[in-house]
Amino acid sequence: MKLKLITVLAVFTLASSASAQDLPNCSAQGLPNHALLTSTLQSVLGANGGFNLPMWASIISRRGEVCIVTRSGGRGEQWPGSRVISAQKANTANAFSLPGLALSTANLYTAVQPGGSLYGLQHSNPVDPAVAYAGNANTYGGPGDPMVGSKIGGVNVFGGGLALYNENGTLVGAIGVSGDTSCADHVIAWKVRDALGLDHVPGGVSGDDDRPDNIIYDIGEPMPSGFGHPHCLPSDVDPASLPTAP
Image (cartoon, rainbow, N blue to C red; front, side, top):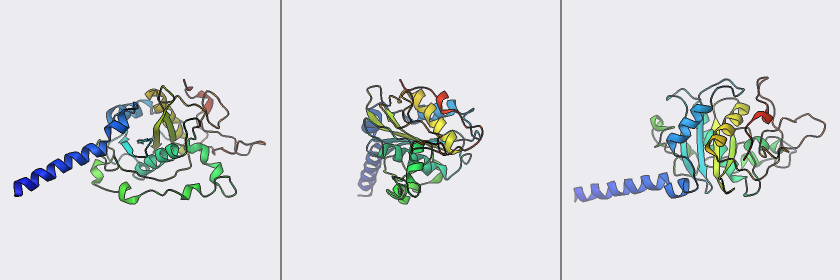
């Protein structure tokens, strides 16, 4: 009887693991695996306008389920709080982008300020703490990160979250990057998305047809877009220098 119970538990554990990976949903549209996202994240670090810190990155499917959580450095080298923020950013970009219109988290900053057209949005859809802080912290950022397979929720309104569109222009999910200034986070997320070939963005609010959901530094200008983001450092990367969408 004991052996039978152990067998049942083992089968249940394997089934749960397969469900958590959600391979049909996360990989069918060309979303990367953990190893590819990790190596791509590491490859773009460097001259991104921030402090050149180790980073977290998360990918969420169109259904809002976490597919991957990874980090560029060793355990404890990234800001611990940025793990959940990276997933929150991915959730936001996915939740507020459409097949024909991409909104990056950077595009939301001005609209959610008091008096803005989306004021209060940042308080909706809160992060699920039971998902965010589940499991053994030693597994955070690895292939078995406890967030994988669950819906994290959360709304983030500064740079670092971008919707993902495959080569057919299909919206397949979103990426969130966190661990540096929010301006550098946006640049790093942008470069990762470009390297993965998931930047076939159909349209956005940036005013730049080649970079539709790019960060906009127009706060304080005579005719601001209403979707602007503040500068972080004098070293911020010029948005017009980022790779163009295909």
